[in-house]
Image (cartoon, rainbow, N blue to C red; front, side, top):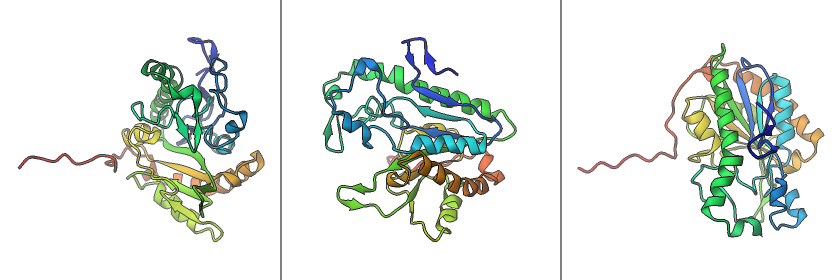
Length: 273
């Protein structure tokens, strides 16, 4: 894997952190960066907008890198802002390229056509999904089937609501690592832990649906509140705190099996009587 994409002579949309293929875990960071390729300028936005959550998940990259280091595990991180295209959305999701995000109009996205969306998908979205799939294929050939852990962060306040959780675990219908990890977190007396908060983990076409649910790999998404991980030191402190709890969950052989669970996004087919 390379960090330079020869097709367009710009840095690759994927940062690869090397690790042991038999580590049993792959870390993913969908919204690691607030950068944009030079050709897109600033999408018409004030530079201050790129310090906000609309551009990236604050602290998530530092969390991911530290956890990958602790577990000597591979990790993949995106290198471009979610304002360009959202790697955690399905290819046909209407929010794949956001025109408006948390009150901010994005001029460079407001009038783009289908051809531009497809171009961004091919150049900046597909490589992340494809490299993750290829890496999971290689890891699955080792002595231990991998678990997928995605790292995100969320805003302390949303639409005047002060979110009470320090950490939230998002998952769909596979409980193998999510439920024991939530239990381990809730055993910490100083933590308020969200179960599918502040978002629902069942999203058709998202990263974990495609790479975890469809493959039968155990997976979950960890959300940390952004004010707690806004500096590298604080993010690494949280990674150090989460690591032993995660290691305990990953020690279960059941977590490293292929096991298919029907996604909550799937709707039963109504049969005509």
